[in-house]
Image 1: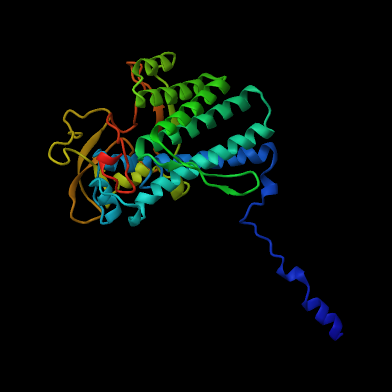
Image 2: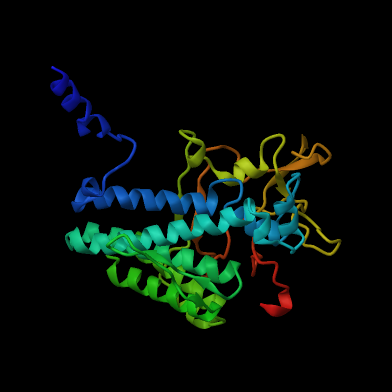
Length: 337
């Protein structure tokens, strides 16, 4: 009896615990599994771009004076003052980390997708969309950060492969190649238009204006590529709404910052920056009677990633015309970028 109890007490079965919250690698293989990974990577991109209070739109808007801080956190104020540092952590690091997660995730899914998916039109269009989204993340790194951004990845065997620091020109080259791959795979008009606008944006950033106009010449002026948001979870909320619309928001529509900044709160209202007066107070408790932006008025408000103007040139940002050229997480002075 004692021997039996001893043997039972040493059974390893007691240490074998099911982990329903952890998805095994074997469960996401094959065509269906890769589709699940793709959906996750797409959501990571949406979070990085227009989700969270410090997504790419909000962070670059804060730097470029389209948005101003009504918060109490130093990381957000220092970005507004062009004195950001990764030592502050928080908002500065989260924008960068979210973009890297989206880029690396999409790059990994592309490899898996090519390996297991058929080559029919639907699969090729999905692949084109993924290439384009990867190209947009690369473009954002070139536009928003100084030279030296590395693109690391997780290899097929699970090893982490560190990327070399890239110059801004090299990052644009990669973004352009991603858009070319998207164009090569796209069979439907939606995905060709998305990739064409992405390609034109890179060309604009490279100063190739005539080539940019040519790249979008076949894109309908009514085309918009929409990113969806939801009230289902906080992660799925529109981060621009969260950052700038409710009472106690941490950001607000910027205008005339530094006394000579652009006047975004013009009357009559610029259709790109709709706003109304309000009695809102910012999170800091001292910013009062804040105007309310009326472009993203709900948690589930969609965000536009890509569209074209009637002049045929790609629109840079969904918020307004100017864009932030450099988001300097290392606090590098402009003269050194």
